[in-house]
Image 1 (tube, rainbow, N blue to C red):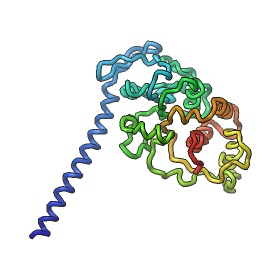
Image 2: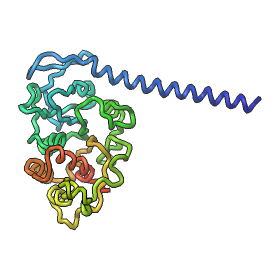
Image 3: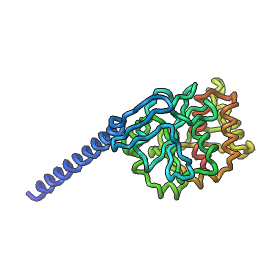
Image 4: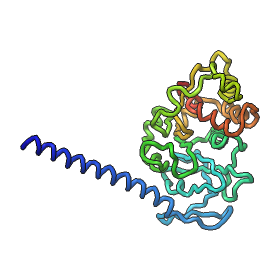
Length: 285
């Protein structure tokens, strides 16, 4: 009877553990949903306000100096994206929302230096504009409340930011918000050995070595043979790690994005997604 009793006990414990996990998943999802449903947008244009579920009224166009901010979030907002969820993360995180709309969306005072490269241009604009007054840490994320590539704590970016260990960010300097290495690692691009298909299609992979030389201002001999990256353009960086590169480095990257004929706007964003970790001091692969 003892073995049977032990089996029953294990099954009960397994059932309780499963129930607890399901409860936590549902609670996390409903908590994140409350962020979107309990925010009320008031007014229009430059007078637009957000009323949070705690009764706090926030002016969307009020942007504090990053120098006085501990943790900042930088996003690029397209015209119809709802970024109200960002403001529910205050005061722990301070949002800096760049309008990617043309003409610029009323009510959003932050405008990127150009409109090529998707979110990459907003990320670089924030760094260039605030290089001497950066916050302690900065999260560079997509504007949507949920992302399919958020893989550890569910699809809500807010949940990840609320649980990220800032001491780990400060120690490592650069932390990608995705945990799974697939797709992208261990190798995403072979700059010195493009495929025949990439060459025939004139894909950006075929000229990646030349792009790398321009972006990082290095000779061809310093282009890595392999580049591996963790998908998908969302990460947190410390002030010290950003400043390991000069402001001129970031300005050069902006200029490349604005002037290159190697690819289109989507391709520019794709390139930066492959090299953000290198930009911020991590190994190429």
